[in-house]
Image (cartoon, rainbow, N blue to C red; front, top):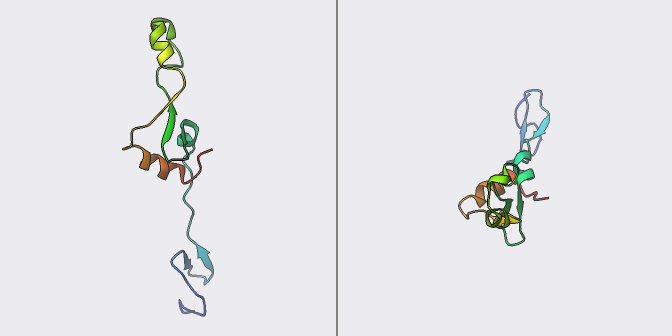
Length: 90
């Protein structure tokens, strides 16, 4: 069987040795990134601040107050997070 036996093979598909048309694998979402980050409408990445899960008795009230809520990531990290999320924020 020849490789071009009537199939219209695009850039996202390939023929196997048996002659079946197989599409290329999809990019999967990185699940750990999905649990830790969320993309805003403007494309920024929000995350929970570090140092809030335990050992809070050592921190001052001001430190604990300033660790509340979420904050945005640095703009250098955003493209990596967007690739890992593969378009799925939440």
